[in-house]
Length: 92
Length: 447
Image (cartoon, rainbow over all chains, first blue to last red):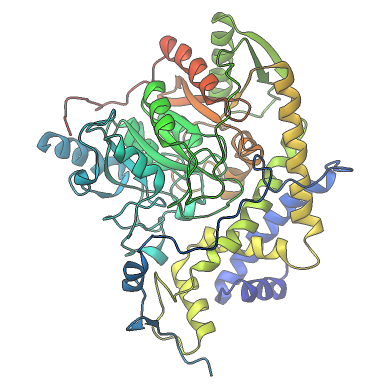
């Protein structure tokens, strides 16, 4: 993978890589993609994709409030907040 | 209790299996009368345990104090077991050595210059050293079975969906399960039967539907090609074949035609799922946040870059790439079809045989760093373990021999829900060859 593609992918993944990391990761990503290309030899004609193995149908639950009572505990772990609001840098 | 602390401290100076250890912190959360009354256990640090930090071996969660407890852990506490600490691991479960932990190094109790395996290396090392009779791990592509084999203990990856993952930090959701490193078949079975069950907090849990055929007559044995295994592991594998024949099982050699494609298919699926699951670490709601960021996008990018280690970044990049528009058919969709093919391979084998025996890993425990096996070779070596994850099947690593002073295990897998079959085979092998103990092992303490 060339560096341009890597930087584009990193931007999509919200990773800001420095120049040294780009050099190193470009090689490692390329080595893995070469390994992935082995899959081209597999005969998969007529096979359906498997996304999961045992569950036969989607399972949903009723849209009603549960009782986890975790919200205060979770808010205490927010890096920066004001009362019950999470603070992030200015959007505009 | 004093003796226990001293014993653990003595070992921990050498092996570093715990990230946190406090045998009394959560004692009050355990039932004083359950069947596992007072039995101490370790919890891999990607599984929630209230009162302790949950770091996942990552800087991005280094000081994250966990506000709740995983269902699997709660079930064990209800049965009386006492969680005594959090076990070191490869960052977010990504690795085969525990060397990818950003927080500590874990050594193999049999030879401290070698790794304990990974990603549940802390769990396996602690059990091998006798610090706990069992420890929870997680297995996405072999992360319980491989360290169990490296450290000479039992390692179970249960059938997908049988143990609740509520409280397990997600890495690759369609593959991973909470698993067990145990000092014996008996405790591994007990812990599994206590932990499993449908959980309203995890919609991927399934009803447990074993066939009832718990005794095995026929074991298929995976055929090994020249150079597939190190000399030690090949020796050990041959010993295991001899033993199952001596035990009276009907043994037949089989091949898994899809095996050569499972590693790329596994890594495509695992990294794709990881790239989505790890999007939640963005410096906003919890974990490391780069204070100097001036825009929300900067906050995410800077926090993730400072908080994730090299291997995690590599896998996020790979996962993002294979899911990019234009590449999906070539990678992700193809991998899912190979997954169908490996399921077909297993189904064909289990029409003829009750269980399948195969190696765990091509080598015994390797040295720290990449001198014995590069990171890429370590990934390629996942082939024998990751097949069971792709197919959702139960698989158990069983201690087999000691080769040049290092333990080597062998693996058994069976159709979904047939864990009992695996335990029965394992028990018979345990009578012939019980798990060996490293020098310095003792059970003189009482927790």
